[in-house]
Image (tube, rainbow, N blue to C red; front, top):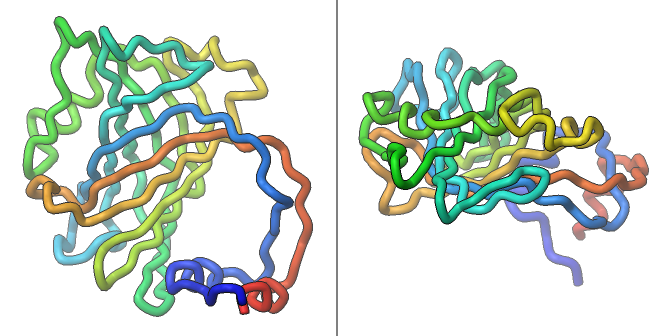
Amino acid sequence: MRSLLTPFRLAVLATCVLLWAASPARAQSLLFDYVGFDYEFANPNPAAFGELGSGYVGLGTVPFLFPPIVANTTLNEYTMVIQGMTPTSITPVGTFNIIQYTPGTLIICEDSKAGGTPADFAPNPPNAAVPATFADGTAIVVGTLTGFQFVIDTVNGTGSFEADLNITGGTQLSNFPLNQRVGWTFSGSTSNALNIPSGYAHQLDGQSFLNAPTAARRISWGRLKAGYR
């Protein structure tokens, strides 16, 4: 017997009338993995998340980087900042809010461990350390994030997000073949860990990857629901 839809799946699926269902997954090419925290600035309503007029900022350390990025994690610290996004719409589905954002930017920086400035999740950002200690050093990868969607459970604050990432700049832009500068997926999940510094909203854990081409077939909303019964 197949499992029933979880509340999270139901929340995502309920926004679609027709969906594209891909064939069985093929190999993915992982670009980088990151961990960190997010916060809102501006933040017109501190009691809410994703409210209209707010600005989304995510930042973290990037402990794992893969080709075509060239990295030396022994000598250097790698950090990430995503910003420039503001909500365009909020769709409530049960206990979930599905938040759509304007395009934003992503920067991965390389900073020497010996002479650079360590990343500092100083409380109550923005401040002198945040986002500055995550955006210093050399910007090795710069990209644009489009279609950023955040699905959040309004009861416990956990959720997930996903966007399309296109590589547009940075000192390592030439490492990316032309056909690998677009089509990356940037994704992550959030949690309410006990160690979240004051002033941050969620703990982040995610990655960016490039899907191998897959065949797609169109199925109806009713047929998709039936597959979970």
